[in-house]
Amino acid sequence: MPEPLPEPADEPSTASPTDEFARIEVALAHVAADLEERGILAGGEAQDVLNAQALMAADPTIAEDIQARLSNGKSADRAVFEAFAGFRDLLVQMGGYMAERATDLDDVSQRTIARLRGVPAPGVPESATPFILVAHDLAPADTALLDLEKVIGLITREGGPTSHTAILARSKSIPAIVGVAGAEDLADGTIVVLDAANGTVDTEPSEAELAEVRGAIAERADAAAAPLTPGALADGTLIPLLANLGSADQAAEAVALGAEGVGLFRTEFLFLDATEAPSVETQVAEYERMLRAFVGKKVVVRVLDAGADKPLSFLNDEKEENPALGLRGIRALRSSERILRDQLTALAIAEARVNRYGSDSAAGGDAAAARDAKVEVWVMAPMVADLDDTEYFVSLARELGVRVAGVMAEVPSLAVLADQVFDVADFVSIGTNDLTQYTLAADRLLGSVAHLQDPWHPAVLRLVGMIGRAGRDAAKPVGVCGEAAADPLLAVVLVGLGVTTLSMTPAALADVRGELARHTLAEAQELARAAVNATSAAAARQAVTRLAAANAVG
Ligand code: PEP
Ligand code: MG
Image (tube, rainbow, N blue to C red; front, side):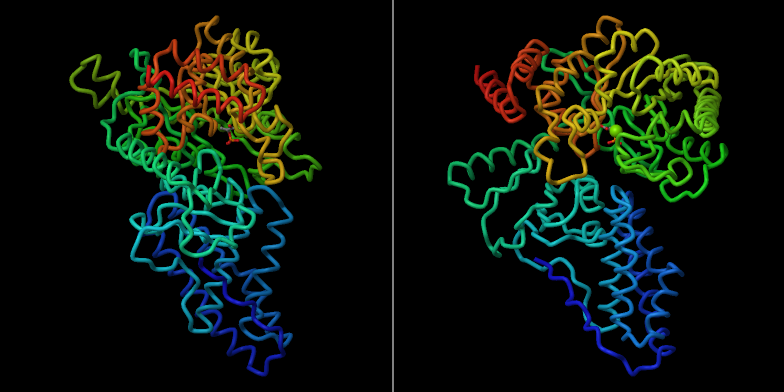
């Protein structure tokens, strides 16, 4: 387990503040350069995270704070420690997404102090054999460059499901469980079974359990090596498998892993650091970059989902007591319609530009080639509650040139009213992360109620079933783009409930593709009936696992 450096003692310093500051400036510059270099080596999403961390090391406000502490007689180590700790506390107080960036700041602080002391920064231990890494927390800089031949799993004491460590581990397909109380008590060399899908750590597995786990690992390796065929059930029913992305930089990897398009493009990730609303031109450039990577495919773009765990300063500046129940998603956009209008306009322009270019370059008037050279853009709104929100969004989207407009089902009221919503919306995409949070009234970022944050809960699945039925009656598509779609067996249940496409982190595509291929539609419907009739999430998971195993044997 990597140990953090001990806290620098708070003793008066006799060194010259000017000399000490010069030393600190050099250390910070080295840390920033090292983080950028690690970003270049890691590429993709990790590079964005590490570049953001490098900016923290170069932040003039933190430098000024350090300088003031040196003038007050603090030692170099202590001044750095206190300044970063102060900013860390500010982030923690902001809560949600910002609070989970606190670890990134801690890491910059530790690297700088290590540099000042001339010792190596705390990092990942060396080992000759593959191992599960147990850490108090892991810095993005370490997660990004983990040796995947050696580190086969990750358990941390700190961190929530949306911390950078968790996000990067997911994108690298490393099974990881964060926020495990007592993780630090695990002794080196303990045999551990880590089941990231179910969030369990078994420290005393029996021989029989170990044999079962080895079988599951071998099956997973087969799924990852299988050819990239379109998502389909055993009877040939097509279930397109799409990717959840937050930036155009992730597009190439998603395509390489067999994504048949994008089911959720989270546009707010592009603007998390923006202090004012991005211009139409800035947005067009970003969207065009994304759309060009998916020519010949479908891209479902979500308009800005600001608020709660993803605050955007230009959209949510009011302090709210319960931000998850406040002015977020479509509610925030309705109160700042100019921002929504600009975004819809930018999306319509980006689609037109990509498709005009596509048809110009298509081979000599060949209709099929022209179609294949186009990208299909669908646009949806988050946190839609009812028909009024739906009518508002769909009519504005059409007015501004968007051709396919739908809504996300994240608020339970939308599921209850799904038949009315389908009269207006072209499609519905179910965000099971928020739908679970709101159905069970359990904050998705809070470890103490994590046991209720389970999309296997029959209450959540019954709501999915209501949307599935309404979609079938209206002959319109129903997608799932929450984390539930990345759980292979739950994905089959969702299809049995009437879901027609599944969108997930690209790393999960192979497992889900493999599991779908093992069940017919009739079997998926049978599994879905067992799940909705169970009395708890655990009972639903157990009933479906048992039935699926029996079907496989029979
Ligand atoms: C969801 O809520 O399931 C979803 C896909 O949106 P996000 O996780 O970005 O809130
Ligand atoms: Mg959501």
